[in-house]
Length: 114
Image (cartoon, rainbow, N blue to C red):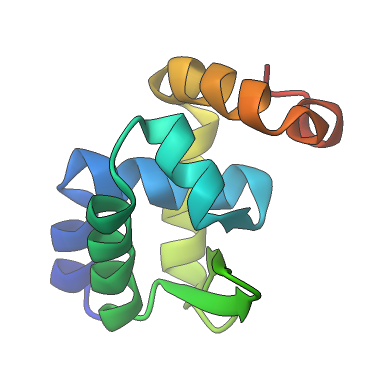
């Protein structure tokens, strides 16, 4: 991965939020992401498609919904950057995590984020 690709993808607030949420929760469904981000499903899907094109995330279709996670073959420095960003900017996701935990209460138990 080229640094400019990662930083370009992370420069958009929605895509950054998606990456950090996936880092924190491991895997999330599009339906959870739309509620947490308070965005339409097409808008969230469009941002996820851009992250897929950059090979930052992968999706797995399960029934009606697609579940996303960080790409399992994401290079080490990119994984570290995303993890470090999450660790030192928890407040960035505070409101988003509150909404996510309302939609998906098991997330609160799994990650203690709420």
